[in-house]
Image 1 (spheres, rainbow, N blue to C red):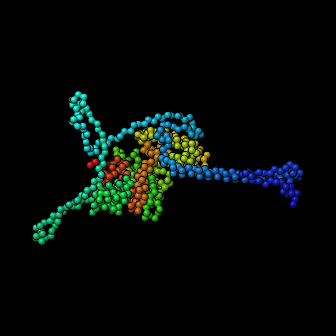
Image 2 (cartoon, rainbow, N blue to C red):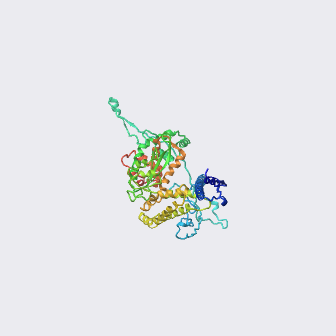
Image 3 (spheres, rainbow, N blue to C red):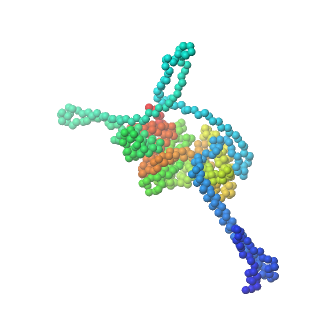
Length: 548
């Protein structure tokens, strides 16, 4: 062992972990060697130890930072799960109904002007009973006093009628069921019978019905369809309902009727789809569906609809369509096949499958806002942050939409170009800056990343006045199917799911055009068998139904 090595071995420079910290033992001055080479080696050794210490501390800092991020992520997930379980499902914020009451500025980094406090006074209106429709049948019952009481008790003179007090009650008459018996007399020639010649029998043709040789009338079929697809009443419950009237009508029979109606009603559905693809603007969405006899665990019901402001073939009549399409998967090819080269505007959520279409995609600000609402729920209770600023800024965009709701498409476009674009540019600058300040895996980081990815689509609604700021039109169209799915849970076969898609389309399209689905379905089932060639007069915006 050399003298230098011996001197180095006498220098205590090891790390001693204590209370989470590392201590380095310093060299005492009296132990320093006089040899220059030894001092150099000592200095190098101390430097190496210092570098090791810095590296060790850097590793620990990184580990602590990662643990903090993991803890924050787990805390956010826990808060979200608690909110989903116990919180309100509505996305309406506290001042959603006071759009002109701006919340205080929550993020000063993007504030150019001080926030203005506004006061909104709420007045509670006394509830008023809605008057019953005048076209309902009325039965008047007069409750009068006896003739003996129509004399004044003070002077004895006759009382005169000074007026009357009226009140209305609604009487419900249960559904009436009757049997329609079709009688077709047969006629033959008795003379030909006596002569032994061929006897020709004459009889009136059988009445045409939606389902040949079936006891179901158009009104019965419409009742079953509207009960299931409008009021979410499964067939097994309808089976028990008919039993109350002494009628045995099995769910299997009713299901068979639905399938047999498919070819007839599909002609109307196909015409709907043809008109849909001629529109300049379509909404789309999808929701899962379980089909028992399908290989895949989850199938999907896709929905396509037109908004009330979308241009249509006949400018004088609205073209409101709500079409459902059953598919065995969520592949983007499903939408591509259904839209069949459609190149107009298609408003959707952030699902990447829609990218396969030739359409120009329009984003949904309701989905963009929802990400920030989720991030807001992960914040410490009572504290504000970036999510609050984003939500309040998005409210300003919706405020503009509220103000121009009744405007024409050209007026809407001008307002958006003059007002909304400015707010959108401010929001984009805030997103770019905030993306560098927050952890990407945090809830707020994911919300910001989603908005940045969707930005070209989110910005696109300002291009035309007939476009919408969000895709709520399609989400509202999906809800009736989702509510019905909670009752009947699944479909047995793909053909049953396809029949359901067509029935839902007819019911929801009738509702969108202000028609009662039962009346419209009965009209279709009465007209289609007798006039199979023409379809245009059966479109809901061309139909005028009168109450019986």
